[in-house]
Image 1: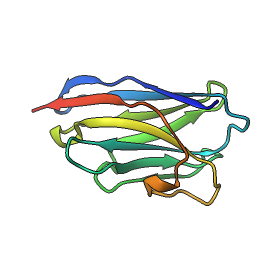
Image 2: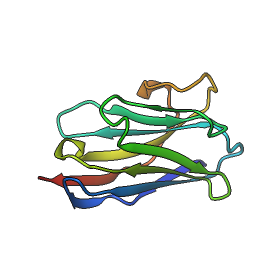
Image 3: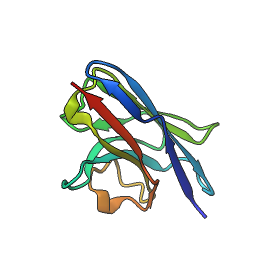
Amino acid sequence: QVQLVESGGGLVQAGDSLRLSCVASGLTFSSYVRGWFRQSPGKEREFVAAISGSGGSTYYADSVEGRFTISRDYARHTVYLQMNSLKPEDTADYYCAIDRANMGLRRGASFYDYWGQGTQVTVSS
């Protein structure tokens, strides 16, 4: 049974940084595409970032490009999202996910097969 567990969320001020972690367990293959999404109340879940199975390619939403960095640690089965220069509009629940299809870095939530329970990020102004 595949499980994804996010951590690292919290309440911060605008301009601060946070690092989110997502640990995977139960996978038979470790090099799937991994992604981060976020969802605010009343809004649809939106793509934030994705990283390839090799870790050599990354893809970001325009809204976080240059501020957020996605990375992965194969030995720890963990994907990270380093978030710098946080803004109030970054406030959301953040979810990690796995795309098993190996068809490149995709931003559509429907392409992702497994999801974590989310971690809350609140950025005050």
